[in-house]
Length: 79
Image 1: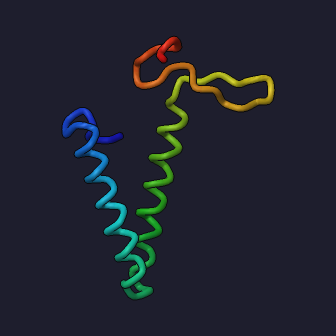
Image 2: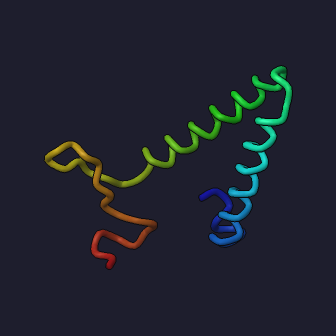
């Protein structure tokens, strides 16, 4: 999570949740002329999610399902 190493995981999650909630509520109350701004915000958010998932170390199972091989530096044998 961005800023997690600087602010700590709980604080960073709180900041991101508050920002997401604020943007979501604002999108429902703003006039239609502001839609392009929210479209850019949606695109940036989607790109961040895709980059995060693509950066995870994983392998494919026999059913072609991605399987996480390492999580947050804990290694494959973490409980």
